[in-house]
Image 1: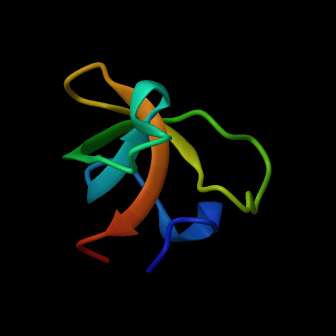
Image 2 (image 1 turned 90 degrees about the horizontal axis):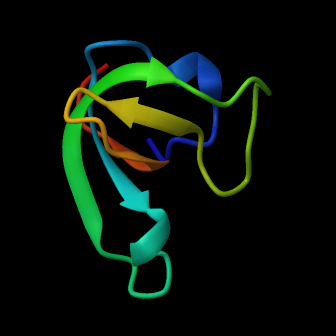
Amino acid sequence: MDGTRRSDIRQGLRVSIVLKNDQRTGKLTEGIVKDILTNSQVHPHGIKVRLESGQIGRVKEIFEK
């Protein structure tokens, strides 16, 4: 899954996100979702989340359903 639909994401899922500073390189950071920050149901660049580590970025890949 690509992380563009809010309904696919929930707390506790393991995901890969792209941080704001890494958007140009596309470097992914892996972690567990703590909070969902995007209010809209769909976002073309990925739903914005906060990981348990405190990092914030847009979901690019979901590892578990």
